[in-house]
Amino acid sequence: MSMQTTIKTERERRPHGAFRTRTCVGCGQRVALAARGVDLVRLVLGTGGEVSVDGRRGAPGRGAHVHPRRACLEKACSRGLARAAKGRVDRLARAGGSEPLAPDALVREVRAALDARVEALLVAAARAGHLALGADEVVAAAARGEARSVVVACDAPAELGLPDVRRAVDEGRAVAWGTRAKLARLGARGVGDPGDGVGVLAISSTSIAAAVRDAARVADACGVISVNVVERGA
Image 1: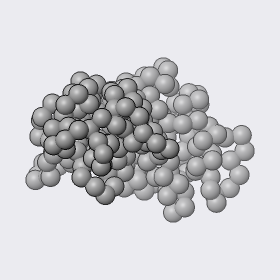
Image 2: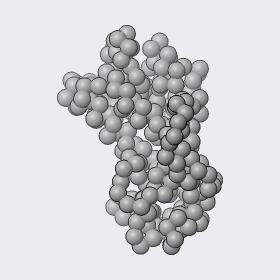
Image 3: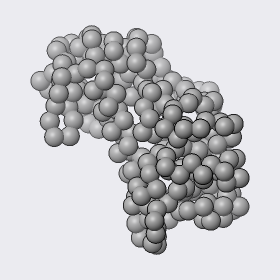
């Protein structure tokens, strides 16, 4: 399989209950924020007609939510965001400035926000001692029952042949992201010499593992190839 091809996987279920709901500014559907499979991207409506992507879902400011689907993003750009803001929204804020709001630009910013979120999560996991780096460490973590999620570098497809990685794929716990060099750079802070790179790592923190999978799920729905849910059964 191509490590750069996004293929949808079976969605994980969350317990039924009362969740906060938000309305997609594209299609108008009200969505329970905690319901897996219908994840929304949070946007922040700024001043002067600008909007930005809130990849971490915690930025201050007036929020708007949209399904990570092309049709919803197009409707959000054409009229949904302006309706939510009760005013003009025609600029997309990004690092270093802004540009005209358009679906392609919005998808790109979603990708950048998701990349930044995954990077921050992996760094946090490394600092807290919740990463197992490299094939040997992943196998050991799996044997201890500590591999909550597995991240495979997009340029390390051979790692998919490891039985414990294959099991994580089959159980929907595997994500393809970054490169060997990037995993080493982000994951190895203070935990040893990564050598020529890291092809696979495991996350032992339940909350961080779930957050990484959530980022992959949103990226998958949006057709983003930077963060992928690995195909089950491949």
